[in-house]
Length: 233
Image (tube, rainbow, N blue to C red; front, side, top):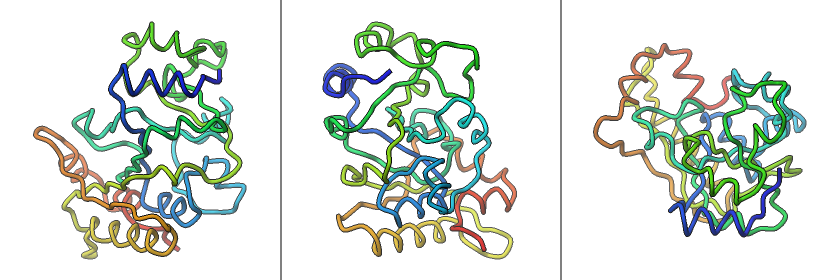
């Protein structure tokens, strides 16, 4: 259900202390976004013949008609949980004012679509109004309340992009490739070549007790390459 943009903005900014929205992805997919001037849905990348890192949720996204949607979180999940974001080490941070754009068709999920029941009605998947979201806010964990931009026709939201944060696992591959250096170089080069506005690129500074580095150290080179390296030919 489409929500009222202004009401949602007021709820998040004035009542819930949300001042930004976030999208995490792999380096390769992030470079595709930057080169094309905005976030693109999984389906939109395919239609344009561009590259994106495969995700285990792709099949589910098609089944539940979210393949052509763009997803944002109301919190930086890497900071919210003491571990890396499962979708990738590159985090795009957006000003919440994007919600004030009337043409942005915004829905909010009650859970990640990977956990949806294919027989469940829409009201079990999405909040039906901002008032329902307000009244039941504490009934749903933050990571389940995903702001969904429904079926954008073009790359979106980079006019609201404020910074890009890259994880630093402090790991090198067996061939000597330093993962953060490769990731930062790819993202910075793409930003310099394609974005007009100045965007801050930062290395993530984890808080005490974050398990991201220990988790990354347990990944093999194939998985680390998929997350941190640009598209491999």
